[in-house]
Image (cartoon, rainbow, N blue to C red; front, top):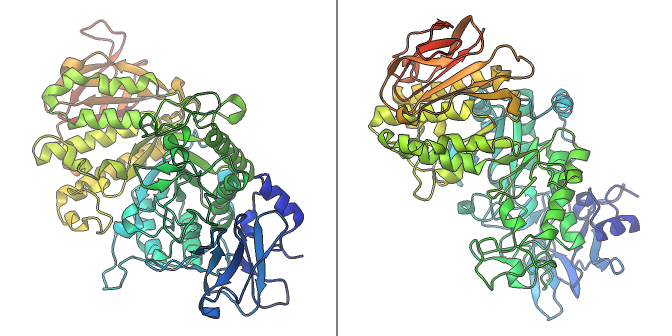
Length: 632
């Protein structure tokens, strides 16, 4: 029996929702040893007949009829003469007589949109060179390692210079251009949007049709493997956006797969997201839960990805998410929590962390649901990290204010520290914040052009120093003026201006300071690594705090922020010990397009304080600026 032949035990595990490598059994795989052809298998329990169709049989559903495996709902066929690269679909005759043409839910590749056939593809045989990377990943503590992700939609990061149609750069070109760019800027990870196959570019990849198929937009599955392999060799991790919350209702996809609500709920109050026009997975069905859990494992197994950022977790957790009264059904206890989705997320996280130590799972979760990053055995969901949407919303709101009004909104800066360690957080400034009329990061800022750039530098400095891992969407690092558009590349021509190059250099220096400073990354999730130095000065919109790590508890980094355009000379900052404090970073540096107001490369702590403090350093605070000083 080959690895792809389906045993009764495989069917048993799949039926109870626990076959972690079901993708090696269902789908299209090479036939038994010595036989040319392909073995097809698909789950369609309510079908009257299932056939494999394609150009090889002129789409004739009578030519390659599949056989059912008992009462498992699985149909299979070993078809001679069908090899790699062959497009195919399943023709499903529903019980009501309809004939449905469906792509393969477990297919490893699909045609480039607008075509939507599955394609017989082999994922075995790629020669990886990342053994050292994977071994190191497995033994590190992600809470104490730097994590600074560059979020990328490859189709609009950079377009090729030729006139190819469609106008997407390849994975090979991305390896030559994106990898060195991200490494030079000091990012630790790429977070890639829209990798699983999706029919509509404008969905950004959040309406997935091929959960097991890497998109054909940028090349073949092996091309994507090579890209990830080169990322790892360059020291970059790769995070994928993963979308288990919903799926589109396209005719060729999962919706009404065998003529019934198979992957989704039949009741629209449970099975539809009206806001998005999509279907909701039936997490209580064992085979559906298995489909998703195995998919999470699949990307780590076959493609060596380093993590999954799970989209729209809040929509999964709550039955009334974005629904009015009467549009949802309560759970068996009468509550609004989706108990089946909660069980699924716990199962997924347990499976991922047990099978792939060091693999990260990250929740985009916008509510106060408790224990998102707590282990399941302690009542949590089991994610490594959660996006800190509260910090993002408050900080962007604060930074968009005219500085004259910031004194009245000081709590927008300070409140995030009340809950900063309630979960293991990532601070996101993602694609969602620079579309749909929200303005680009630079465009959100108040003031003239110089002040706008100063405010972006201040914002990036706040993000660097605040406890929590980091994520920044592409284009924000150099201050793109326009909102993100998925149909066009970033405005790279703006880098012909020194002001945009200087802004990017500021982002680069901040990233490298974060990388090099365990006081920052080593205590992102540790309340012992933070204490306030200056909290109560809203009138001048100044605040300061210290960061330290368990690895280096003696030498803190003092972080000072001035959110007004008014310089403040001789501003006293309390410190714990005497000695020299070296300037580590200044967002107002002339190299970043700043005024260069502060000339204090090193300051000596003194016990002579006008306010009776034990010891202080006296700083000349630059306008709309942030400074980090490393202690003795």
